[in-house]
Length: 258
Length: 245
Image (cartoon, rainbow over all chains, first blue to last red):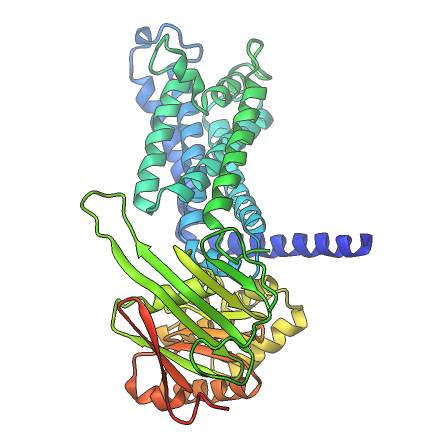
């Protein structure tokens, strides 16, 4: 019995690995994706920093970091989250019918979700690496390791949101618009660019990761006040759990799966 | 027949089939039986259109039998086939199959950026085949359908005909007991078209039950019988010398 279980586990692990390898390789087979993955985050970080630097600091009295730094943090977390979300969305939507065929062939929706999630994870960590590199290149980053970790977590958080959106919104265009808009609003609230006393801003997913990112870049280490790290991790787990449930429900078909 | 219906409107059970007489045929075991299939495409949009596609469609396929499924454009043939394989949920009715099912959809459902070789592997693993079995199936179909030289091509770089060959091979590679093909030869050249029919003859000789959606009237003689789908219902017609054992 134990041997059977071991073989089953090995088989599942091997199949997930085959899927992740195949889909990651397939992603990186498109040179333009690679170029965009490297160029866009760097441009976004530079552009957002320059744009905010040109504004009068007096307009943002409660901002802890300089406007230039805030702009670069904005660009880094925005680029990582948008990339993660869009990649998650397209992992779900672009191969939906083929995934369904694979499920009918015998692959379980759970295994397929794991394959998709791990593929998105690999790509998102690549984007986080580029964004961290661009930040380190342009800004004095106090804690590069934590910066990379929180950017990666932000990307993964939105990758799950992308998988979720892809499961409930039927079109690539509609899903992309929704994601870009959501990340935009999220980062504006998180970065304090829209000063507000309304607590609702703190409920957006990137609020807590942004607080960790700001402290990691400006002073190093974790924020002294608030439980931002735990809450950020909680958002990632919540997004993952909801994405799994919705994916499973939408991908499961009568008679399919195992 | 051992069936394990799920608590949904349509039960897709993988079970041994009995010899129920829904079409007047007798003899070989039934490998696929569908009863009372209903499907309506509804919409929440106030200006949308509601279309009743299937209204109690019944059909069966027996081991070693090849049946055609015909009907006008938009009559619901592909919808029916998707329900038969479990790709689409019906509003009512039951589908029972025995053994494994192979499905070749009308539009190739393949991963565009994977190579043909990788496609065989990813589907072969889903079918729970060993690496040796996957390699053997790959070599066999690449030889029969003449796409050996494209094994390292990404699917998106294949011509329509070659893509369809891979689409068909993926449906066949695990030696299914019942095979459902939705216009599987679209884009085939003449030689491959003939190879396809040779292959179906061999499969039926081995006891595989095959259902094919077809538009060509000159193919009628190749079938043991034909289901015509009209007004949401299927009618059975024996063709050639098929249908009686």
